[in-house]
Length: 382
Ligand SMILES: O=c1[nH]cnc2c1ncn2[C@H]1C[C@H](O)[C@@H](CO)O1
Ligand SMILES: [Zn+2]
Image 1: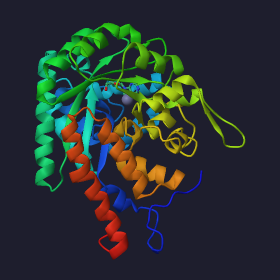
Image 2 (image 1 turned 60 degrees about the vertical axis):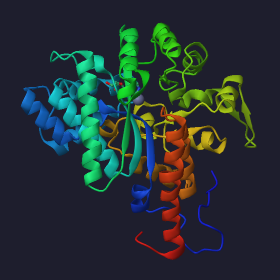
Image 3 (image 1 turned 180 degrees about the horizontal axis):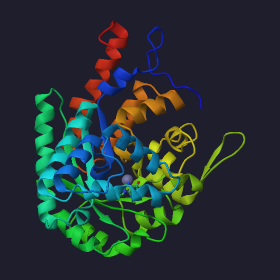
Image 4 (image 1 turned 90 degrees about the vertical axis):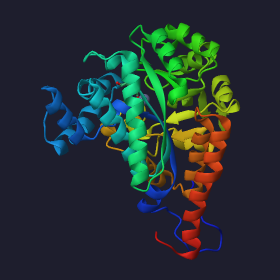
């Protein structure tokens, strides 16, 4: 793909954002799993505190490597097995508060200004908490983490997405839980877990309920299964966004001369500006893409889909928003203008009220990128 310039013509400034600029650039993540983003040290400490004996190692550095390697399996099902360890240490109120606070602080330190973080409350009941107590603990942790981040000089806001597991049968209950906490920072709903064999329409009742309540939801679709999953998520369930959605390229034909033909579903997704929550590194690990350079995000960005960049699981992928952008900068030559475009796309697609999204774009995102561009023009700290 051709390189894109992001520096005004006539300047001699570097076109490629530095690692430091990427980190300082305001970023927005819409797809990040709470139970996929724990610090290895926190896992080790929580395992000791709660008596969990099942960790493969108690050396934090080795544990981080273990997660990355175990998740590097080429299959979504095997990738998902690694979550048994993180969920095992997230069964008490204190553990949930701690993990959520760490999450907010880590994202903020990476330059994320708005995050939608998801997890499945039904996976955190083994210590005797109720679903509502789980949600309350996580919300408390996010507020604490936001305050700690602010004290450290970073501004971040976290919206929570509540996930139901697609192989289970609790989605109605979880949708109602989502709705109950909507005025307490819970901004939407999701389904996750193994995709093949578990079509989104298994949870049609939950989606119909949320539609009836004028609530928002995204659906993991088009990751480990193809177009039928995406079609159902949009046309039967009414998803506002697609988690991954990479397999939409199965409905796009690129001819040898470079001309592109969209099938009906691919055209619908683009025409309706359906947000795609793309997670490049995660897709390489589960086999949904074979390299960064060949990841569908390049084509979909060129075709001006509503593409967003996300981490999915920072622990399992050993990644961060800055890392994801660094890979894309390297693979596609993206610059600050492209980073801003992805970030504005994400902010436009967030499940926050319209006026708040607009304020984030105009008061935080655009000024942040303008400041970085000014460093190129006038010199600065970069
Ligand atoms: O990329 C994913 N696809 C499907 N399910 C996922 C993905 N990443 C995490 N999950 C699952 C495992 C977690 O335990 C659950 C809730 O966060 O969501
Ligand atoms: Zn995910």
